[in-house]
Length: 136
Length: 136
Length: 136
Image (cartoon, each protein chain N blue to C red):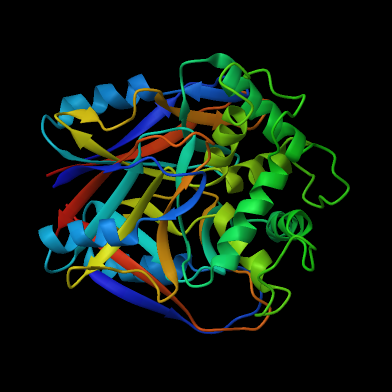
């Protein structure tokens, strides 16, 4: 089963999408399987990270913003705005595809894990994720 | 086939787990297939890297420790100790899920590749990896 | 279906391999499925990134070269040349395996996405990627 998940435009930062994925998985798989996610963009990425304490999320964002600042004189790809090249680099350093085992119709995530869309651009935009679900 | 691999508490650093995975793969798949690994934690991660020379492994650890130091004044998520926020960032920069083709019941790794659990916390703790094995 | 893709030696940098993968996918899958790629090396890696503007690619290369310079006094693994340890670190920070859904016999990539082999060594060498194709 393949489905495109269309996410509404939201601001820059880590946006939890675990529920959206779980609903689809439960709908199409009641036993074991494999859920693969692929984001169709190069200035937004995927991440599995701690979803309990928002301060951890904020620190991840701030740390990556400091590692990959805007207006770095190294950049030549600047036509699409000061946040574009940092967005590509941040995507490079995180994930574009994720594969998560499914058990009893539920994602095999750890207790503190959530799935996040990481929007690296300032301007909110529609984002699309392809979900492939294998039913064992 | 889905199985949880329970790893005993071991110290911080890169811990090779290729053998543990290979034994399971051989047990459940004699032909071709796909082996997916997902770690259930956000302060430990997965990595495929060189398993021949321990000096390469040591340099990876030291390089990442320098890039992501403890006690960075940027961190606000500090309640769980000085090694906790660096552990989340190091996990973010490496892998949470891996998918490895299986050929003739063996992982399709290169000659110098091994699979590692990267423990980023100081205190040894039990770690769990979910393994999904698809038999073609 | 499993196939080894043998890539001819090419220079250091991001080398687009989307076409090579697409040809194989179309040959073996006309409907939906899942394409998994695993590179068999620890000094070259995989990346899905923007394939339209070469300046974005150049900036990714230059940024990573600056983050992971050669001749860093931290390195002890230096026997295989000054570009070897940086190559392992760059591989660690990018991808070794990728999983891409297939739709109507075509890779489910976004409009601006391409698949790249990232050669991190100076000396051109043969590189091998294992491709696993699941036909739903």
